[in-house]
Length: 332
Ligand code: SF4
Ligand code: F3S
Image (cartoon, rainbow, N blue to C red; front, side, top):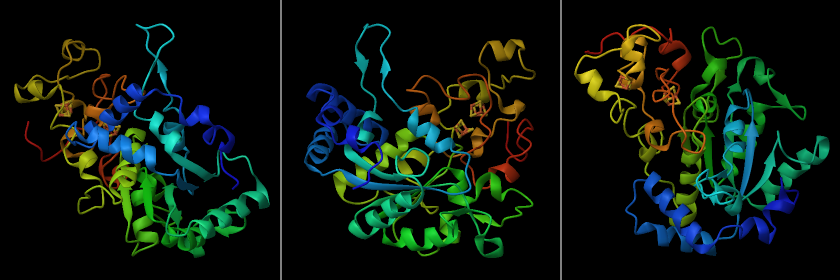
C-alpha cells in the first residue's frame, strides 16, 4: 500500500507510543466529546485496540488547506507543569488508528504514482475506507475550474465517494460550498451533498476550519460502534452541532444582564462582557467550540475576545456578513 506517512504510522512506536493509562484517558476524553458517559471509555479502548487501522482517503478540491492545517496541528503538546511529560490529547488517537493512505498535500507519491495510490486503495478497500473531503466542488462548465491529475473534482468525487464506507465533508467548503460559493459563485461551487447527491453515509462537519477533535470523535465512534454517530437534519453530528455557541458561552450571563462590549478595548471588553453588539453570531451558530476549544484546548474565539463570526453556519460568507454587524432579529 502506498500510504502517507506509512512507515511512521505502521511502526510499533507510532501505535504504542502511549501507555495504557494515557490511552484510557484519551478514550475518556473522546467519550466526553461525544457526550457519552465515562464508562464508555473502556468500550472505546477495547474497540480501538482490536480494530485494524481504518483506511482513509482525504480528497482536496477548492480549498485553502485550512482543515488540513487544523489536522496537522493536532499534535501532542508538552505539559509545562511536568517537564518532559507529554499530555495525551484526543487527537493522538487519530494517526494511531487510521491509515491515511491518500492525501494530496502531505502524501509521498506524486504524479501518476499518486493517482495509482488512490485507485489502488479505492479498489482494495471498497466499502471499507472512509473518504474525507476538504473543499468545494465546482460544477460550472462541467467542473473544469478544479482538476487534479487531469480529471475534474466533480468526476473524482462521483467515482470515489459512492464506494466509501462513510464520507466526511470536513469544513464549510465541502458542506455547502463555503468561500468559493459566496456570491456571485462564478464556478458554481457546491458542497458534497449537492454535488454528489444520494450518498447514504455522509457526515457534514461545517466550520472554517472544522475542529479536528470532532473529526477524531466521529472516526472513533465509527470504529467503536460500527455506525455513524447520531446526525441532525443537516447530517451534522449532534454531539458537536446540537447546541449554539451562545447556549454555553461563558459570557452568556453578561448577555442576560445587558452588559455588552461597545468598542474594542473598552471597559466591557477588558472585563469579558458579551460581544453581541460587536457582531457576535454565537446565538445563531451551532458548534461546540466553547467545549472542545482549539490549539490543544488552549482557547477559542469568544474567550480570546473576538466575536464568533458564524463560520459553522450555512452559507456564512453571505448570510453572516458583515462580520462586525450586530445580528438583526435577535433579542438583547
Ligand atoms: Fe457569547 Fe456571543 Fe452569546 Fe455574547 S452573543 S453570550 S459573546 S455567544
Ligand atoms: Fe467558528 Fe464561531 Fe467557533 S467563528 S470557530 S463557530 S466560535
